[in-house]
Every structure is written in structure tokens, then in C-alpha cells.
Image 1 (cartoon, rainbow, N blue to C red):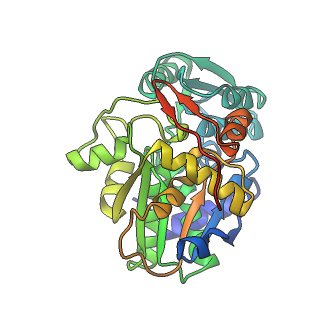
Image 2: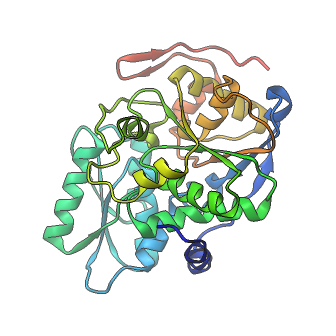
Amino acid sequence: MIEIEEVKNTKEKISSFIKETELVNSNISKKLGVDLKLKLELNQPIGAFKIRGAMNAVLNLSDHFKGVTCCSTGNHGKGVAFAAKQQNKKAVICMSENVPTNKVEGIKQLGAEVKIEGASQDEAEEISINLAKTEGLKYISPFDDLDVLNGQATIGLEIFEQDPDIKNVLIPLSGGGLAGGIAAVLKQLNHNIKVYGVSMENGAAMYQSIKDNKPSQVKEFISLADSLQGGIGLSNKYSFKLCQKYLDDIILVSEQEIYKALQEVYYMDNIICEGACVVGVAALMNNKIKNLEGLTTTIITGKNIDPDLHKNIIEGKDIKMGDLTINGSAYVQ
């Protein structure tokens, strides 16, 4: 499904709209005893990696569509809104009630229409798909779309070109568009590279689906890693198979571990980012991958975190996430 030449063509096609992001050494390396590099996708024009797949999908849009629609926890919607604006296309972004306000406002500022309906991403997806049918719009899945997958896969191509000595890659995992695309590319370039998907403990849809050997629904929970929320779709065509085939393992981390990893990345590397970005760091901090050897990287996927939430975490305050209270603690170097 993902071919190296097509990914190279995609990278060239979207190159004028995206940034080839840096792969940098992390100051966390010495503390963890792991040679760690960070792929800084938070430096994209929209502050997240999602611009890659969204831009590719909009550039490939057939003329008979009046515009585009999608469901999103924030960053995919921002990517689609940005891409549609670049091409003077209508964009309607459907979001659930769980999406943080700052992400909703970021999409509105790009000129897209936002519909807040439903208590979960699955419900928002149904609304978006119905809009596509009734208003002549193209539905762009956040993960289960070949144009989107090829766009996200360009990150894997960049990582390999920037440092072919990479031995392990830890990828934030939700619907599998990022992890599936990157893993497919890296495994074709060097099948010895270990590729891990990392998600939060509660509501990890791809983890449960691979465990069940079929796309499965899970209950959605409010999480610090809010951009990893949502299902993978029971009729998933691409991302489930890619993750099933190419991921070496899936690691789960707790909300408390994500909290501490956000502090670690901020104080050690001076990076302000979303909870979803640091799940790979959280896995390393808590020794969740045994016998890890060689140069390791993880993707810092986006920076669109609520400023007040990040400030409270950095200051070590308690955080209320739905029915869960995450006990705050001051950072200790």
C-alpha cells in the first residue's frame, strides 16, 4: 500500500507547503542511558505533522468536489483547514465535545467552518461522512486514506535520510496514519529497524484492534494525549493492516507517565508540546521497552497544547482530566 517511490513523489509535491523538520539530539539521552534524537514536527506551519497528509490529500482533490470535510481531535482539522485555504477550497471540520478549545479556535482562524457535535470522535466522524454525501465534499480521514498515509510517511523518509544509523523509532499511535506510514517506509528501507507504536493506557483503539485481530471500538477517555483519542473505524481499509504488519510492538503509558514526560521534555530540551508528543519519551523513562539498543528517535508531533494546562503541569500542579485526577509533582532533575 505504501511504496517508496510514491512517498518520494509525495514529498516533492508537498515540499513548498511544509518544512523538512530537524532531527536533533536530546539532552534526555544521558539521563536515560539512551542515545535519543527528536524529530521536531511541532515546527511545521500549523504546529503539527498533520499538515503533510492533509496537504497531499487536498492537492490530489478531484475537481468535482466542492471542498473537503473531516473529523478531528484538532491537528488533522487544522491541517485540512490550512491545506484548503492554500487551494481556495471550502473546509468543514467536525469535532467532538472533548476537543480542547484552543484547537477549535486555531481551526476557525484558518477560515474553516467548525461543527462541534457528538461525545466522541466516532460520532464526529459519522457527521463528517454524512456531510460529504449531502454537500458534495470529499471526506478526508485522519488516518485511513492513502493520500494522508503517503503524506505522513514522508516523515519516515526524512528520518532515514537524516540519520540512516537509526535503530529504533517510537511513534505516537492513534488511528495509525502516522505510525503505519512511517513504519511501512522504514521497514522497506531497512527491515532491521525496530518500530514501536506508543499510546495512552485508556482508549488505545489500535492496540485493542491488533489484540483482537480486527478493527475494534473502544470507550473514549479524556487524556493528556488528547490527539491520540478516537477509534480507527470498523471498516478500516489501510492503517490497521499497516500497523499490524510493520509495528514490532505497541507500548502503553499512563496519564501520570505522560505528565512527567511533558515536564522532562520541557526542562531538559526546552520544548513546549502536546501530551501525545511525549508518549515515546514516557515509554523510555519508564523502561517499557526491554533490551533497547542503538540510536533511538521519537516524533514530537505537535505544539498545540492549551497554555494554561501546560503551565500547570510545568509548575507541578494537580490536573483534572474528566473523572481522573493526575497528582501533580514538582520536576526533579
